[in-house]
Length: 244
Image (cartoon, rainbow, N blue to C red; front, side, top):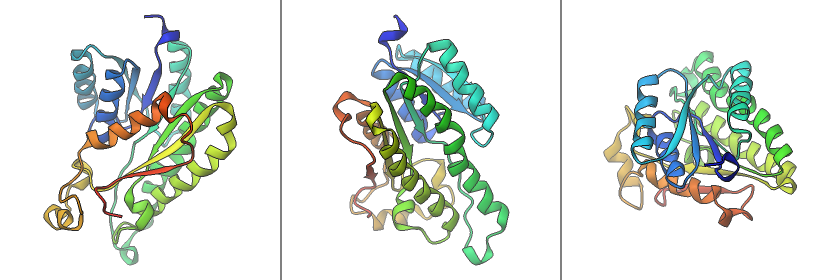
């Protein structure tokens, strides 16, 4: 297939969970997907194999979103190989939960560096490319914690709230160039990110009565990548079962 007729997407944190589900669904819609990962190559390869088994197309791309040089090199490699980048999904994230009074500075800095500095490091070179193309979709994965806050997650909640603010500002800056920037804010999704949490207690707090699945989030991301979402810009869409 001529690459000019196939959109190219980059999904960070795509080796498992929400990122993997997003990559699978976008590939299923005919896009060429780059699955970004930092360390777990085996999981990333398994995710790519799953896509290729379903006749999807993609490639692995290893880099650390906390390192500017690696992000610049990753975007440059995509442009060299594919000629364009149509979709960026900023999904990579971590937790390091502590009560704020007991939180050490490294726990604060690590979470901020991954979520907010990572957003800056990768999104800036992508925006420069999309401005040249005069089109593109950027979807940032935030969290219900960034909207309502979670006790024990002041660092994570602050970082995810920052992503929402950055999204709204960037949407206003580049919306006239055919580029949309939106947030998907999951609630409690059944992934490794819930390790150590009281899941039965959590489910009682969710009106839907269950945890979300990665595919629930991926479906909304896919909509925002579609032509049908061309007039949706600077918005926060919750996928939380009615939690907030």
